Image 1 (cartoon, rainbow, N blue to C red):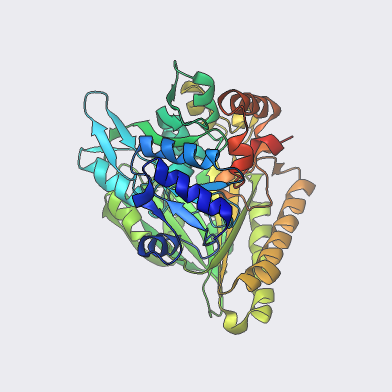
Image 2 (cartoon, rainbow, N blue to C red):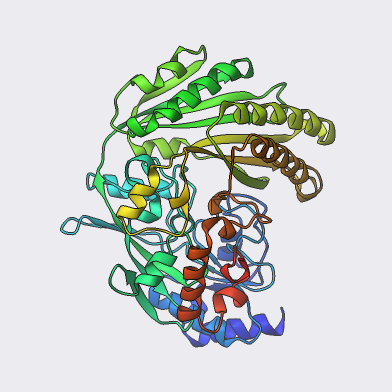
Length: 479
């Protein structure tokens, strides 16, 4: 154990956190390190600390900042899958917020208060007990803190905007250990910066979010053969072109390859947020032959069923393009080439790939502006777009770094080049889907970069969350 780690642990103990500070070999340490969704960010830090409330987060920050040379990471759910994402650290201390996972509801204000270490499968179960719902993650193992500070695409984005747009107040621990609120009237510049600014300003210890009445949804999936690609793309483009008129409907279009398979398949996830069956906008999907499993359920039950497994080494990356069937066709074509190449390079074809297409409508900005705006910079969006995210999983870190990730990067570069040749590329990278080498902030616009840099200088004048918290996308490095 290094002298820096020894000093950090001593300082944590001095401030009353000795009973929640752990080192390798401790049962609690091993349990938490083993609970990351992916193997990639399991970096085995010299120590972790698990504060139980905002005051203890404050004490943890004070202790680590006081320790000369000590760097640290901040973990909420631990779902981000690249090693430098900021949810773990190889040579430092991880502040693990996993004990701060409560969700409460105030029927007078109709606000739900979410602690950052919760996962959405639990959040939805908690708020549904009160007959209400919040706009959060679409996969149950995703953590509250990362999703909301990164922006947050939700089931309800077409109705009410991004997840961060639903937050009316943040409780934040700043670099000096002070605990402040950030909302429309108190620290409003910090309030705006946190809506997409991720871990650049402090540690959010509570999100107060707007709620709306909970309803059962009509939800499930249809599995199609890859031979149905043309029909599915046609249906997807038609659905997206009419989505602004049908904001209660939601889709995920996923091209999937599973380990050892002969071929990939298409998994189309359909959801009506009011529980209406067989809506008009789904008809083209329903007409394509496939294996269908769609039924009425609660949102909590839906995400509990949709716990995407990993336990392998993962990488993902993203790009955005204007809605155009030609670009989607190109993406699915180069995916097939990629799968064939990886089959030759990876023993027993032991890998999986998921290429997902998500609508990004120009109209969503109206919801954000109505709620005070966020940092994503989508006000300039003039056309409806598609966010593409590709995720790859393999069994070893060497295969990930030497084979799979370079191949997927090459594939994305080809798709992007093709989109540019048609004038269909869109300069936007959604932070929560970015790979570690992708920088979303330059795509958020110079005005928003300026606002975030000003907030960073004001609320973190010594640069703790830029230098001492090295993980994640740093606003200080954005141009």
